[in-house]
Length: 491
Image (cartoon, rainbow, N blue to C red; front, side, top):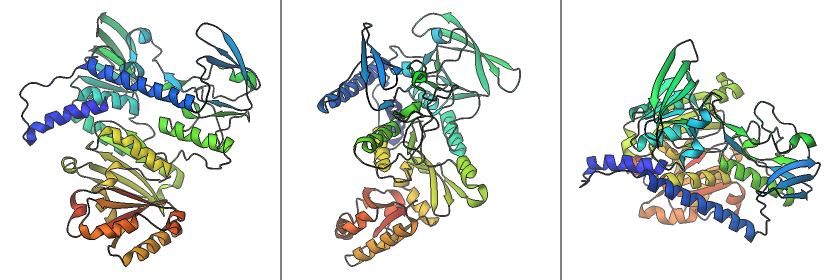
């Protein structure tokens, strides 16, 4: 859906670049949702196929602990089967939360429903301020719909708030309306239909002010509830947060009961992202059955928010960094230029430095195809780089060079060993992964040098130096930089 909205914006922008459309371009909601469901179905089938290939038994039943090391599985026909095991992993996930007012489940939809909604939602009220809420609001607005976002407190809680306000400002420029410090208290259906018409009454969180509005659809994205209440955890003594339903675990995903582990959204205090859950589960399996020791790094999990002005971040937000390291130990600076949005993906770079530790957030204008973001994020996470910023791959590298956060070396066959030694020394000093970015396409005189750099010695690989060739655009490839290879180091 995000990609669909970006394509619509690109069609609009294309006219200013000389493209002439012979007829009015319209969006077909049914075609889009049908394609989404086919894609989701293909993913499910691929997972089932992978399980079969690995000889993993898939049991489509509802599981519930009945005693220690024993669960009861009930299928759709009510048939019960019992299983025993030495170890258990809880990965039941979460389900969308409702408002708790009359009519919310009858008249409202959730973000889960939106992907299979058989009709265009029309004028939509999005309730919530999470990444899911803003993503939904963003792509609905991108499809040309009237969108209002009702926010009870702050946008993108847990993310850097300066970046969150940049995201909101860009959405307002696209026509999204924000109602700050209000919560719905009453829902009334005025007309039935697909969509129908709803009247929403909201109350201020800071006083007695009341407002009301008319919408075709009300979409709730106010959080999710963990699916842990009816699976018998209390019967075996697993501690669960009574308020959130989440399971407290230690640094190896182990619950209060030693043989019960948990990964994913049900884990208390950890990042709620699918790739993070996958990585945590993969590392857990390796520790339990592969003799490995590596633990999941939840703090440095690269994250992308697919709002119209895309937001990528890694590590602590500035507010959290202040809390952890104290303000006097931090250096914070922001670079912003709206003119860059037209030229390339770079929009905003925010960076907080704690001695040799660098925490970064950033915004992209969405020039990269949306589907490339997830592989890039997973690749960065896989090698445990502690920086992810899509805009870092382009113009922002020159900005960071001015802040002495990266260096460069001249090309030439004789400089290859020196280049490796210099990087190894820096990596050893910082005790941090080292990422080398080589510009593509590169000048002819760089070809032999980059060939050597891309095939480093075993000693370099052991030192934790990673090499990655990516496009570096704009002023990075000017005459003053064309013979340089940039490398960035982060702890």
